Length: 107
Image (cartoon, rainbow, N blue to C red; front, side, top):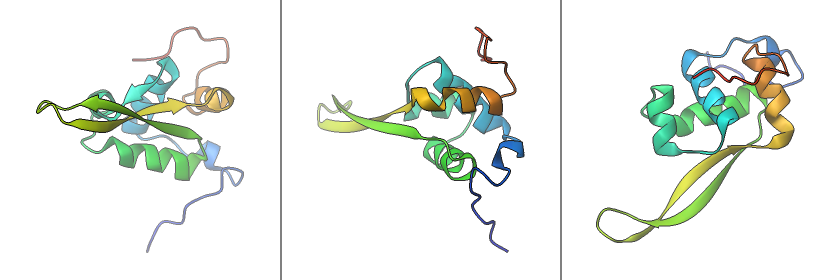
């Protein structure tokens, strides 16, 4: 049976984050992160899927900005930088079980 995506207002805030989701979300609270860095931080080999699940399950607005860069062969390519919008920071803090005044985000 397929898992139904949930509306953030129907109790999604009470669903527990997976360890990978928690690590990725904590990283985004610290600042923008590339797909490659989120792979390393979260322990996933497909961090775009982790981000998609955070968006779908918890209704988080996580933006992916594409930046031009050069790959190791010198070709012009774009890579994604994920950013948690300022409006979503309080929700992310709550999902991680932190208090709003916490200055330390877990690593």
